[in-house]
Length: 518
Ligand code: FEO
Ligand code: CA
Ligand code: CA
Ligand code: CA
Image 1 (cartoon, rainbow, N blue to C red):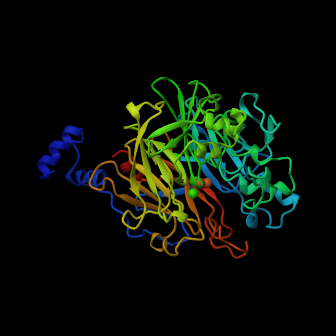
Image 2 (image 1 turned 30 degrees about the vertical axis):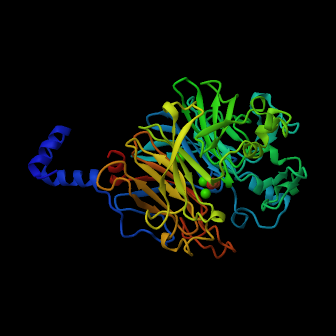
Image 3 (image 1 turned 135 degrees about the vertical axis):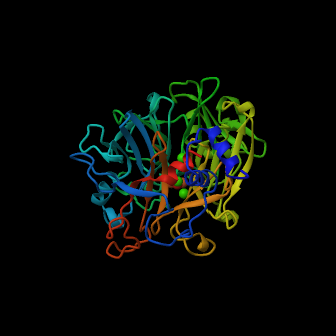
Protein backbone atom coordinates (compact mmCIF):
# COMPACT_ATOMS: atom_id res chain seq x y z
CA UNK A 1 0.00 0.00 0.00
CA UNK A 2 1.52 3.37 -1.04
CA UNK A 3 -0.16 5.97 1.18
CA UNK A 4 -2.97 6.46 3.67
CA UNK A 5 -5.52 7.33 0.99
CA UNK A 6 -4.85 4.21 -1.02
CA UNK A 7 -4.77 2.18 2.18
CA UNK A 8 -8.18 3.71 3.11
CA UNK A 9 -9.54 2.83 -0.32
CA UNK A 10 -8.29 -0.71 -0.04
CA UNK A 11 -9.78 -1.19 3.43
CA UNK A 12 -13.05 0.35 2.24
CA UNK A 13 -13.02 -2.31 -0.42
CA UNK A 14 -12.55 -4.92 2.33
CA UNK A 15 -15.40 -3.39 4.35
CA UNK A 16 -13.24 -1.62 6.95
CA UNK A 17 -13.91 1.91 5.53
CA UNK A 18 -15.19 3.47 8.75
CA UNK A 19 -12.10 2.76 10.90
CA UNK A 20 -9.77 5.53 12.15
CA UNK A 21 -6.22 5.79 10.92
CA UNK A 22 -4.84 4.34 14.17
CA UNK A 23 -7.17 1.38 13.92
CA UNK A 24 -6.17 0.99 10.29
CA UNK A 25 -2.49 0.90 11.22
CA UNK A 26 -3.12 -1.71 13.91
CA UNK A 27 -5.18 -3.83 11.57
CA UNK A 28 -2.62 -3.60 8.84
CA UNK A 29 0.26 -4.45 11.16
CA UNK A 30 -1.64 -7.49 12.42
CA UNK A 31 -2.53 -8.82 9.03
CA UNK A 32 0.84 -8.39 7.42
CA UNK A 33 3.78 -8.29 9.80
CA UNK A 34 4.01 -10.76 12.62
CA UNK A 35 7.46 -10.49 14.08
CA UNK A 36 9.17 -12.65 16.63
CA UNK A 37 9.41 -11.39 20.21
CA UNK A 38 12.92 -10.89 21.57
CA UNK A 39 12.00 -13.26 24.42
CA UNK A 40 12.53 -16.25 22.09
CA UNK A 41 14.29 -18.64 22.15
CA UNK A 42 13.90 -19.04 25.91
CA UNK A 43 15.41 -21.27 28.58
CA UNK A 44 12.91 -20.22 31.24
CA UNK A 45 11.03 -22.81 33.25
CA UNK A 46 7.73 -21.33 32.14
CA UNK A 47 5.25 -21.50 29.32
CA UNK A 48 6.48 -18.29 27.71
CA UNK A 49 4.03 -16.77 25.21
CA UNK A 50 4.43 -14.03 22.61
CA UNK A 51 2.92 -10.64 23.46
CA UNK A 52 -0.75 -10.77 22.55
CA UNK A 53 -1.20 -14.35 23.81
CA UNK A 54 -2.13 -15.60 27.27
CA UNK A 55 -3.07 -18.98 28.72
CA UNK A 56 -5.06 -20.56 31.46
CA UNK A 57 -4.58 -24.13 32.73
CA UNK A 58 -7.42 -26.44 31.74
CA UNK A 59 -6.51 -29.71 33.43
CA UNK A 60 -3.42 -31.36 34.90
CA UNK A 61 -2.21 -34.85 35.73
CA UNK A 62 -3.96 -36.03 38.92
CA UNK A 63 -7.05 -33.78 38.60
CA UNK A 64 -10.24 -35.74 39.28
CA UNK A 65 -12.38 -36.38 36.19
CA UNK A 66 -15.01 -38.50 37.98
CA UNK A 67 -15.52 -40.27 41.32
CA UNK A 68 -13.02 -43.01 40.42
CA UNK A 69 -10.56 -41.64 37.89
CA UNK A 70 -7.99 -38.88 37.56
CA UNK A 71 -6.56 -37.20 34.47
CA UNK A 72 -3.61 -39.32 33.30
CA UNK A 73 0.07 -38.50 32.88
CA UNK A 74 1.98 -36.99 29.94
CA UNK A 75 -0.98 -35.66 27.97
CA UNK A 76 -0.33 -35.52 24.23
CA UNK A 77 -2.80 -35.48 21.28
CA UNK A 78 -6.00 -33.45 21.75
CA UNK A 79 -9.16 -33.41 19.66
CA UNK A 80 -12.67 -32.17 20.27
CA UNK A 81 -16.26 -33.02 19.39
CA UNK A 82 -18.88 -30.32 19.94
CA UNK A 83 -22.12 -31.18 21.76
CA UNK A 84 -23.49 -27.69 21.13
CA UNK A 85 -22.07 -24.16 20.70
CA UNK A 86 -20.83 -24.00 24.30
CA UNK A 87 -20.07 -27.59 25.19
CA UNK A 88 -17.69 -30.15 23.84
CA UNK A 89 -16.10 -33.49 24.57
CA UNK A 90 -12.32 -33.41 24.48
CA UNK A 91 -10.15 -36.48 23.96
CA UNK A 92 -6.62 -36.29 25.34
CA UNK A 93 -3.93 -38.97 24.91
CA UNK A 94 -1.74 -39.98 27.86
CA UNK A 95 1.40 -41.29 26.22
CA UNK A 96 3.56 -42.69 29.02
CA UNK A 97 4.46 -42.28 32.68
CA UNK A 98 7.51 -41.15 34.56
CA UNK A 99 7.75 -43.54 37.55
CA UNK A 100 9.74 -40.95 39.53
CA UNK A 101 6.59 -38.85 39.83
CA UNK A 102 3.66 -41.28 39.56
CA UNK A 103 4.88 -44.44 41.33
CA UNK A 104 8.51 -45.35 41.93
CA UNK A 105 11.33 -46.53 39.65
CA UNK A 106 11.26 -49.81 41.58
CA UNK A 107 9.52 -52.36 39.38
CA UNK A 108 6.74 -53.98 41.42
CA UNK A 109 3.27 -55.13 40.40
CA UNK A 110 1.79 -52.44 42.64
CA UNK A 111 3.73 -49.67 40.85
CA UNK A 112 2.84 -51.07 37.42
CA UNK A 113 -0.85 -51.17 38.42
CA UNK A 114 -0.72 -47.48 39.37
CA UNK A 115 0.98 -46.67 36.05
CA UNK A 116 -1.62 -48.60 34.01
CA UNK A 117 -4.30 -46.18 35.24
CA UNK A 118 -2.40 -43.13 33.95
CA UNK A 119 -1.84 -44.04 30.27
CA UNK A 120 -4.28 -44.38 27.35
CA UNK A 121 -6.52 -41.36 27.12
CA UNK A 122 -9.21 -39.29 28.82
CA UNK A 123 -12.54 -38.03 27.59
CA UNK A 124 -13.51 -34.81 29.36
CA UNK A 125 -16.64 -32.69 29.06
CA UNK A 126 -15.90 -28.95 28.77
CA UNK A 127 -18.28 -26.02 28.95
CA UNK A 128 -17.59 -22.43 27.90
CA UNK A 129 -18.65 -19.92 30.55
CA UNK A 130 -17.55 -16.28 30.78
CA UNK A 131 -15.35 -16.84 27.73
CA UNK A 132 -13.44 -19.69 29.38
CA UNK A 133 -13.56 -23.44 28.87
CA UNK A 134 -14.00 -25.37 32.13
CA UNK A 135 -14.26 -29.05 33.05
CA UNK A 136 -17.82 -30.18 33.83
CA UNK A 137 -17.17 -32.00 37.10
CA UNK A 138 -18.44 -35.57 37.22
CA UNK A 139 -20.12 -35.38 33.81
CA UNK A 140 -21.12 -38.84 32.56
CA UNK A 141 -18.91 -38.13 29.51
CA UNK A 142 -15.78 -37.94 31.70
CA UNK A 143 -14.14 -41.32 31.29
CA UNK A 144 -10.72 -42.83 30.98
CA UNK A 145 -9.60 -45.47 28.49
CA UNK A 146 -6.57 -46.94 30.22
CA UNK A 147 -3.82 -49.52 30.25
CA UNK A 148 -6.33 -51.88 31.87
CA UNK A 149 -9.38 -51.33 29.61
CA UNK A 150 -10.44 -54.47 27.76
CA UNK A 151 -10.42 -53.59 24.05
CA UNK A 152 -11.51 -55.84 21.14
CA UNK A 153 -9.90 -55.92 17.72
CA UNK A 154 -12.22 -54.51 15.02
CA UNK A 155 -13.99 -57.02 12.77
CA UNK A 156 -13.63 -59.79 15.34
CA UNK A 157 -9.98 -60.23 14.31
CA UNK A 158 -7.70 -62.36 16.43
CA UNK A 159 -4.05 -61.51 17.05
CA UNK A 160 -1.85 -64.26 18.50
CA UNK A 161 -5.04 -65.99 19.64
CA UNK A 162 -6.60 -62.93 21.33
CA UNK A 163 -9.75 -61.16 20.13
CA UNK A 164 -9.79 -58.85 23.17
CA UNK A 165 -6.62 -57.42 24.72
CA UNK A 166 -5.77 -55.46 27.82
CA UNK A 167 -5.41 -51.74 27.48
CA UNK A 168 -4.06 -49.07 25.20
CA UNK A 169 -0.74 -47.33 25.83
CA UNK A 170 1.98 -45.20 24.24
CA UNK A 171 -0.83 -43.01 22.87
CA UNK A 172 1.07 -40.32 21.02
CA UNK A 173 -0.87 -38.39 18.37
CA UNK A 174 -4.05 -39.41 16.53
CA UNK A 175 -6.78 -38.22 14.22
CA UNK A 176 -10.49 -37.65 13.80
CA UNK A 177 -12.62 -39.69 11.42
CA UNK A 178 -15.21 -38.17 9.05
CA UNK A 179 -17.85 -39.80 11.29
CA UNK A 180 -16.53 -37.88 14.35
CA UNK A 181 -14.80 -40.60 16.30
CA UNK A 182 -11.24 -40.19 17.52
CA UNK A 183 -8.20 -42.21 16.53
CA UNK A 184 -5.44 -42.66 19.10
CA UNK A 185 -2.09 -44.07 18.00
CA UNK A 186 -0.01 -46.55 19.99
CA UNK A 187 3.56 -45.38 19.37
CA UNK A 188 6.46 -46.61 21.54
CA UNK A 189 4.66 -49.73 22.78
CA UNK A 190 7.96 -51.58 23.11
CA UNK A 191 8.86 -49.43 26.14
CA UNK A 192 5.99 -51.13 28.04
CA UNK A 193 5.92 -54.78 26.93
CA UNK A 194 8.98 -55.13 24.67
CA UNK A 195 8.95 -56.25 21.04
CA UNK A 196 9.22 -59.61 19.33
CA UNK A 197 12.49 -60.35 17.61
CA UNK A 198 11.37 -61.93 14.35
CA UNK A 199 14.68 -63.76 13.87
CA UNK A 200 14.40 -65.69 17.17
CA UNK A 201 10.62 -65.35 17.76
CA UNK A 202 11.49 -64.30 21.33
CA UNK A 203 10.37 -61.14 23.10
CA UNK A 204 13.18 -58.60 23.36
CA UNK A 205 12.81 -56.35 26.41
CA UNK A 206 15.85 -54.18 25.77
CA UNK A 207 13.72 -51.06 25.23
CA UNK A 208 11.06 -51.99 27.79
CA UNK A 209 12.19 -49.62 30.51
CA UNK A 210 8.79 -49.81 32.25
CA UNK A 211 9.02 -53.64 32.36
CA UNK A 212 5.27 -54.25 32.49
CA UNK A 213 5.89 -57.63 30.83
CA UNK A 214 7.45 -58.85 34.10
CA UNK A 215 4.07 -58.79 35.83
CA UNK A 216 1.74 -59.26 32.86
CA UNK A 217 3.48 -61.73 30.51
CA UNK A 218 0.18 -62.59 28.79
CA UNK A 219 0.05 -59.06 27.34
CA UNK A 220 2.12 -59.69 24.22
CA UNK A 221 3.88 -57.00 22.17
CA UNK A 222 1.48 -57.81 19.29
CA UNK A 223 -1.43 -56.50 21.38
CA UNK A 224 -0.04 -52.99 20.94
CA UNK A 225 1.20 -50.71 18.18
CA UNK A 226 -2.21 -50.33 16.53
CA UNK A 227 -4.53 -47.43 15.72
CA UNK A 228 -7.39 -47.40 18.24
CA UNK A 229 -10.77 -45.84 17.49
CA UNK A 230 -12.69 -44.19 20.35
CA UNK A 231 -16.36 -43.23 20.37
CA UNK A 232 -16.41 -39.88 22.23
CA UNK A 233 -19.99 -40.33 23.48
CA UNK A 234 -19.56 -43.82 24.97
CA UNK A 235 -15.76 -44.26 25.36
CA UNK A 236 -16.12 -47.56 23.48
CA UNK A 237 -12.78 -48.51 21.91
CA UNK A 238 -11.63 -50.90 19.17
CA UNK A 239 -8.18 -51.66 17.81
CA UNK A 240 -7.84 -51.60 14.03
CA UNK A 241 -5.54 -54.12 12.43
CA UNK A 242 -6.21 -52.58 8.99
CA UNK A 243 -3.64 -49.78 9.39
CA UNK A 244 -0.85 -52.09 10.52
CA UNK A 245 1.24 -52.33 13.63
CA UNK A 246 4.26 -50.09 14.18
CA UNK A 247 5.18 -46.97 16.18
CA UNK A 248 2.19 -45.03 14.84
CA UNK A 249 2.64 -41.34 15.49
CA UNK A 250 -0.62 -40.04 14.04
CA UNK A 251 -3.52 -41.12 11.83
CA UNK A 252 -4.70 -38.24 9.67
CA UNK A 253 -8.02 -38.87 7.90
CA UNK A 254 -9.33 -37.34 4.72
CA UNK A 255 -12.22 -38.27 2.44
CA UNK A 256 -11.33 -38.87 -1.23
CA UNK A 257 -13.34 -37.66 -4.21
CA UNK A 258 -14.37 -41.29 -4.66
CA UNK A 259 -15.85 -41.20 -1.16
CA UNK A 260 -13.27 -43.42 0.42
CA UNK A 261 -11.66 -42.71 3.76
CA UNK A 262 -7.92 -42.30 3.46
CA UNK A 263 -5.59 -42.28 6.48
CA UNK A 264 -1.96 -41.13 6.45
CA UNK A 265 0.21 -42.50 9.25
CA UNK A 266 3.95 -42.52 9.95
CA UNK A 267 6.23 -44.86 11.87
CA UNK A 268 8.31 -42.70 14.23
CA UNK A 269 11.52 -44.66 14.32
CA UNK A 270 14.85 -44.03 12.59
CA UNK A 271 14.71 -45.26 8.96
CA UNK A 272 11.11 -46.44 9.16
CA UNK A 273 8.33 -45.51 6.77
CA UNK A 274 5.30 -43.47 5.78
CA UNK A 275 2.04 -45.34 5.18
CA UNK A 276 -1.35 -44.63 3.62
CA UNK A 277 -4.49 -46.64 4.23
CA UNK A 278 -7.36 -46.52 1.73
CA UNK A 279 -10.52 -47.84 3.32
CA UNK A 280 -13.06 -49.76 1.23
CA UNK A 281 -15.74 -47.63 2.90
CA UNK A 282 -16.53 -44.01 3.68
CA UNK A 283 -18.15 -45.13 6.95
CA UNK A 284 -15.49 -47.23 8.68
CA UNK A 285 -11.81 -48.26 8.72
CA UNK A 286 -12.48 -51.97 9.09
CA UNK A 287 -10.95 -53.06 5.78
CA UNK A 288 -8.98 -51.61 2.90
CA UNK A 289 -5.48 -51.47 1.46
CA UNK A 290 -2.40 -50.42 3.40
CA UNK A 291 0.29 -48.79 1.25
CA UNK A 292 3.84 -47.73 2.06
CA UNK A 293 5.70 -44.86 0.37
CA UNK A 294 8.58 -45.15 -2.04
CA UNK A 295 9.52 -41.46 -2.09
CA UNK A 296 12.07 -41.71 -4.93
CA UNK A 297 9.60 -43.36 -7.29
CA UNK A 298 6.67 -41.29 -5.98
CA UNK A 299 4.73 -44.49 -5.52
CA UNK A 300 2.47 -45.97 -2.88
CA UNK A 301 3.26 -49.70 -2.70
CA UNK A 302 0.41 -51.95 -1.53
CA UNK A 303 1.29 -54.27 1.36
CA UNK A 304 -0.98 -56.89 -0.12
CA UNK A 305 -0.05 -60.56 0.03
CA UNK A 306 -2.19 -61.36 -3.04
CA UNK A 307 -0.41 -58.77 -5.20
CA UNK A 308 3.15 -59.48 -3.98
CA UNK A 309 4.90 -62.80 -4.66
CA UNK A 310 7.89 -61.37 -2.69
CA UNK A 311 5.72 -61.16 0.43
CA UNK A 312 4.45 -64.72 -0.01
CA UNK A 313 8.00 -66.00 0.52
CA UNK A 314 7.94 -64.59 4.03
CA UNK A 315 4.32 -64.24 5.18
CA UNK A 316 1.52 -66.81 5.33
CA UNK A 317 -1.46 -64.53 5.90
CA UNK A 318 -2.41 -60.89 5.37
CA UNK A 319 -2.86 -60.46 9.12
CA UNK A 320 0.81 -61.46 9.52
CA UNK A 321 1.74 -58.73 7.03
CA UNK A 322 -0.28 -56.19 9.04
CA UNK A 323 1.23 -57.37 12.35
CA UNK A 324 4.81 -56.97 11.06
CA UNK A 325 4.52 -54.35 8.28
CA UNK A 326 8.04 -52.97 8.86
CA UNK A 327 9.42 -56.22 7.48
CA UNK A 328 6.94 -56.24 4.57
CA UNK A 329 7.71 -52.58 3.75
CA UNK A 330 11.44 -53.28 3.52
CA UNK A 331 10.92 -56.34 1.32
CA UNK A 332 8.97 -54.14 -1.12
CA UNK A 333 11.50 -51.28 -1.24
CA UNK A 334 9.84 -48.63 0.94
CA UNK A 335 11.90 -45.49 1.57
CA UNK A 336 13.67 -45.20 4.92
CA UNK A 337 12.68 -41.85 6.46
CA UNK A 338 13.96 -39.62 9.23
CA UNK A 339 11.26 -40.44 11.78
CA UNK A 340 7.87 -39.41 10.35
CA UNK A 341 5.81 -37.75 13.09
CA UNK A 342 2.63 -35.71 12.72
CA UNK A 343 0.83 -35.36 9.38
CA UNK A 344 -1.61 -32.62 8.30
CA UNK A 345 -3.58 -31.85 5.16
CA UNK A 346 -3.36 -28.28 3.84
CA UNK A 347 -6.88 -26.81 4.08
CA UNK A 348 -6.63 -25.03 0.70
CA UNK A 349 -4.28 -27.05 -1.54
CA UNK A 350 -5.00 -30.53 -0.14
CA UNK A 351 -1.26 -31.31 0.00
CA UNK A 352 -0.04 -33.62 2.76
CA UNK A 353 2.59 -32.26 5.18
CA UNK A 354 4.71 -34.74 7.15
CA UNK A 355 7.05 -33.75 10.00
CA UNK A 356 10.34 -35.66 9.77
CA UNK A 357 11.73 -34.90 13.18
CA UNK A 358 15.41 -35.96 12.86
CA UNK A 359 17.66 -38.95 12.33
CA UNK A 360 20.82 -38.41 14.30
CA UNK A 361 22.41 -41.61 12.98
CA UNK A 362 22.22 -40.08 9.52
CA UNK A 363 23.44 -36.67 10.70
CA UNK A 364 20.02 -35.10 10.33
CA UNK A 365 19.86 -33.24 13.64
CA UNK A 366 17.17 -30.68 12.92
CA UNK A 367 14.63 -32.47 10.74
CA UNK A 368 12.40 -31.13 7.99
CA UNK A 369 8.82 -31.08 6.73
CA UNK A 370 7.98 -33.13 3.66
CA UNK A 371 5.19 -32.06 1.29
CA UNK A 372 3.34 -34.69 -0.71
CA UNK A 373 0.98 -33.94 -3.60
CA UNK A 374 -1.17 -36.85 -4.74
CA UNK A 375 -1.55 -37.30 -8.51
CA UNK A 376 -4.63 -35.42 -9.76
CA UNK A 377 -5.32 -34.43 -6.13
CA UNK A 378 -6.77 -37.90 -5.70
CA UNK A 379 -6.05 -39.28 -2.22
CA UNK A 380 -6.58 -42.85 -3.48
CA UNK A 381 -3.93 -42.46 -6.20
CA UNK A 382 -0.96 -44.84 -6.19
CA UNK A 383 1.35 -42.04 -7.41
CA UNK A 384 2.51 -38.76 -5.91
CA UNK A 385 5.13 -36.03 -6.09
CA UNK A 386 7.05 -34.83 -3.07
CA UNK A 387 9.50 -32.16 -1.99
CA UNK A 388 10.99 -30.82 1.21
CA UNK A 389 8.82 -27.91 2.25
CA UNK A 390 11.21 -26.54 4.91
CA UNK A 391 14.30 -27.67 6.79
CA UNK A 392 14.84 -27.21 10.52
CA UNK A 393 18.13 -25.59 11.57
CA UNK A 394 19.79 -22.30 12.37
CA UNK A 395 18.50 -20.55 9.27
CA UNK A 396 14.85 -21.27 9.97
CA UNK A 397 15.16 -21.07 13.78
CA UNK A 398 13.40 -24.31 14.69
CA UNK A 399 14.69 -27.83 15.24
CA UNK A 400 13.03 -31.27 15.41
CA UNK A 401 9.47 -30.58 14.15
CA UNK A 402 6.93 -32.95 15.68
CA UNK A 403 3.28 -31.82 15.84
CA UNK A 404 1.67 -29.80 13.07
CA UNK A 405 -1.64 -27.99 12.61
CA UNK A 406 -3.08 -25.74 9.93
CA UNK A 407 -5.48 -22.98 10.86
CA UNK A 408 -8.30 -21.87 8.57
CA UNK A 409 -6.07 -19.25 6.88
CA UNK A 410 -3.58 -21.96 5.90
CA UNK A 411 -0.92 -20.85 8.40
CA UNK A 412 1.16 -23.80 9.56
CA UNK A 413 1.69 -24.23 13.30
CA UNK A 414 4.63 -26.40 14.37
CA UNK A 415 5.74 -27.67 17.75
CA UNK A 416 9.25 -28.99 18.26
CA UNK A 417 10.60 -31.96 20.17
CA UNK A 418 14.29 -31.68 20.90
CA UNK A 419 14.81 -34.52 23.37
CA UNK A 420 15.30 -33.47 26.99
CA UNK A 421 18.80 -34.88 27.23
CA UNK A 422 19.93 -33.01 24.09
CA UNK A 423 18.23 -29.69 24.80
CA UNK A 424 20.43 -26.64 25.38
CA UNK A 425 23.55 -28.58 24.37
CA UNK A 426 25.35 -28.69 21.01
CA UNK A 427 24.00 -28.85 18.31
CA UNK A 428 20.74 -27.67 19.90
CA UNK A 429 22.09 -24.94 22.19
CA UNK A 430 20.80 -21.92 20.28
CA UNK A 431 17.23 -23.23 20.07
CA UNK A 432 16.63 -23.05 23.85
CA UNK A 433 13.66 -25.00 25.19
CA UNK A 434 11.14 -26.61 22.83
CA UNK A 435 8.74 -24.20 21.17
CA UNK A 436 5.65 -23.42 19.14
CA UNK A 437 6.19 -21.74 15.78
CA UNK A 438 3.88 -20.43 13.08
CA UNK A 439 4.62 -20.09 9.37
CA UNK A 440 2.31 -17.44 7.93
CA UNK A 441 0.72 -18.23 4.57
CA UNK A 442 0.65 -14.59 3.49
CA UNK A 443 1.81 -11.10 4.45
CA UNK A 444 5.28 -9.67 4.98
CA UNK A 445 6.45 -12.56 7.15
CA UNK A 446 5.05 -15.32 4.92
CA UNK A 447 7.13 -18.49 4.80
CA UNK A 448 9.31 -17.66 7.79
CA UNK A 449 8.85 -19.63 11.03
CA UNK A 450 8.10 -17.29 13.93
CA UNK A 451 8.26 -18.55 17.49
CA UNK A 452 5.18 -17.75 19.56
CA UNK A 453 5.66 -19.97 22.63
CA UNK A 454 8.41 -21.71 24.58
CA UNK A 455 7.95 -24.72 26.86
CA UNK A 456 9.01 -25.12 30.50
CA UNK A 457 12.20 -27.10 31.27
CA UNK A 458 12.49 -30.54 29.58
CA UNK A 459 8.92 -30.22 28.22
CA UNK A 460 7.49 -30.58 24.74
CA UNK A 461 4.44 -28.72 23.45
CA UNK A 462 2.08 -31.10 21.66
CA UNK A 463 -1.54 -31.78 20.74
CA UNK A 464 -2.25 -28.49 18.88
CA UNK A 465 -6.04 -28.22 18.62
CA UNK A 466 -8.07 -25.12 17.72
CA UNK A 467 -11.62 -24.63 18.88
CA UNK A 468 -14.27 -24.18 16.21
CA UNK A 469 -13.90 -20.39 15.95
CA UNK A 470 -10.10 -20.32 16.23
CA UNK A 471 -10.47 -18.23 19.40
CA UNK A 472 -8.71 -20.80 21.58
CA UNK A 473 -5.73 -23.04 20.95
CA UNK A 474 -5.70 -26.08 23.22
CA UNK A 475 -2.16 -27.26 23.82
CA UNK A 476 -0.51 -30.06 25.77
CA UNK A 477 2.53 -29.28 27.87
CA UNK A 478 4.05 -32.73 28.09
CA UNK A 479 6.83 -34.06 30.34
CA UNK A 480 8.01 -30.90 32.19
CA UNK A 481 10.87 -31.89 34.50
CA UNK A 482 11.45 -35.16 32.63
CA UNK A 483 15.16 -35.21 33.46
CA UNK A 484 14.53 -35.14 37.22
CA UNK A 485 16.44 -37.82 39.13
CA UNK A 486 14.67 -37.15 42.42
CA UNK A 487 11.08 -35.98 42.74
CA UNK A 488 12.11 -33.74 45.65
CA UNK A 489 14.54 -31.87 43.39
CA UNK A 490 12.70 -31.64 40.07
CA UNK A 491 14.28 -29.95 37.07
CA UNK A 492 11.00 -28.07 36.45
CA UNK A 493 8.41 -26.66 38.84
CA UNK A 494 5.82 -25.86 36.19
CA UNK A 495 2.94 -25.12 36.61
CA UNK A 496 2.48 -25.14 40.39
CA UNK A 497 5.89 -23.99 41.62
CA UNK A 498 6.36 -27.47 43.12
CA UNK A 499 6.10 -30.90 41.45
CA UNK A 500 5.97 -30.54 37.67
CA UNK A 501 2.63 -31.57 36.17
CA UNK A 502 1.88 -32.36 32.53
CA UNK A 503 -1.15 -30.20 31.72
CA UNK A 504 -3.47 -29.06 28.97
CA UNK A 505 -3.69 -25.28 28.62
CA UNK A 506 -5.99 -23.00 26.65
CA UNK A 507 -4.24 -20.21 24.76
CA UNK A 508 -6.21 -17.12 23.75
CA UNK A 509 -5.52 -13.53 22.79
CA UNK A 510 -5.50 -10.91 20.07
CA UNK A 511 -2.43 -12.35 18.40
CA UNK A 512 -4.15 -15.72 17.99
CA UNK A 513 -7.20 -14.22 16.31
CA UNK A 514 -5.16 -11.89 14.13
CA UNK A 515 -3.01 -14.80 12.89
CA UNK A 516 -5.88 -17.20 12.26
CA UNK A 517 -7.92 -14.44 10.56
CA UNK A 518 -4.97 -13.29 8.42
FE1 FEO B 1 5.34 -39.56 20.75
FE2 FEO B 1 6.85 -39.45 17.97
O1 FEO B 1 6.24 -38.64 19.42
CA1 CA C 1 4.99 -36.73 18.84
CA1 CA D 1 -1.68 -32.30 14.20
CA1 CA E 1 8.92 -36.61 19.02
